[in-house]
Length: 315
Image (cartoon, rainbow, N blue to C red; front, side, top):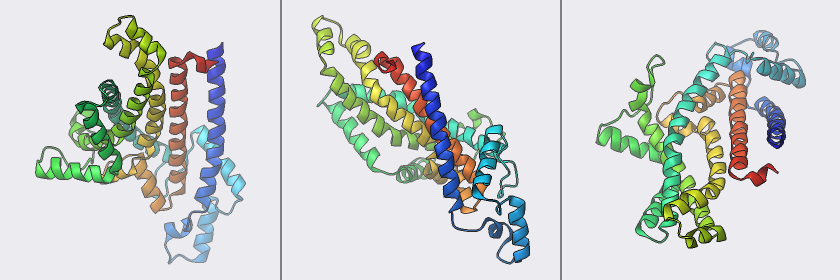
């Protein structure tokens, strides 16, 4: 019963957050510079044609009514039509979301176990050669922006040693296996970018847990080091890392615009940039809403993971 109450409260909080975010998204889109009618018809259009298009698009209606129509359509699955691509927004956004999800899933699947393992190893061997090496690599990775890491990987692995393709233009009909070589460089860029944060957080949390009395007591009982680390220390040390992972999920879905641009990867972040450049309002609103929903659900998953790892949170 407590679990149901816990989950119900979190779901209500997600719904409240999404309602507030939707209002903010709509308000920000309304104050973007430029006129949609002018961008569609061009500067040579007559005032009569511009006025007719504004009526057709509903731009002459009051903002509250337009917001209610938009959010009602979003809930019902009618996301409107793209002004730039001349197609329904829903399949366009979902297709790009799927591509970003593939990239994010691969990056998390490689980065999370590697970061946790390096963080634990660095904490267990504190002050040693491994600790210093992991700390140095993490410091360099966290200091470099993604476009620098991506460009360096392209120069080395695509041009100096032509092992991988420099871009990630993917044929929609190609299978994941055939597209795999094109995904290696962007995934590697994201792994290096994520590795630094998660490794440092895991190391710091692990060092704190290793100093706790129950860990020292487990060692005094003669338990093996491996069992002390995996059974007694790691579970509690993962709590802060779970929060970092949840934040990175939202970042990977919508915030990897730089990586998608560097490697010409057709994901959700790049779609949003193109929509903003062309004032494609329906696409801007729905991509922003989907990204916000991704962040909210990632944090909900983090809350559930917190409750599983630490039962006291459920109370």
